Length: 156
Image (cartoon, rainbow, N blue to C red; front, side):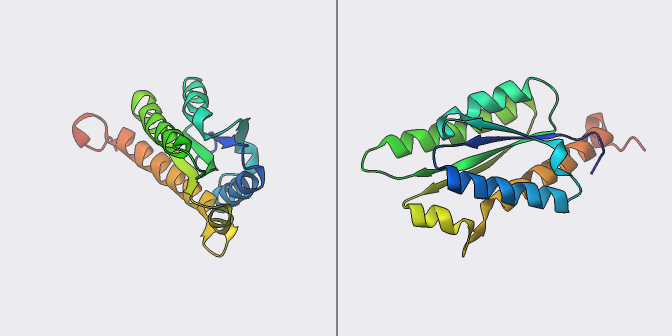
């Protein structure tokens, strides 16, 4: 990975233990990919609903090659779950499309706390790893696309 690459992580703190596990998984995977932890800027936010606004503000700085949104939304007894999940997912996609800065969706949307824990370093793996893999893939894809220039012809 290029030396000047920086990645931001917006981490929803509502289910803090799950979010911390996702963040650690993402940081570890980025390090395996050649991006040390000191090139990852972490911003804690209240919950997943705030992820798009936080990602947009960070994307607008021009400092980051990609942004990971991490956290968990756990279904309750009301429709609140559906609204939060939809807002987070569609908002992050909009940030990606509007700014050109890829936003990885590492926000778990689970029915139970046990499901979230299983996906944050438990027996289902760590979805923070997958968010990190997504930003690495997108950073590399965008670098390759920029090298091609207009019309898809390689500039080399």
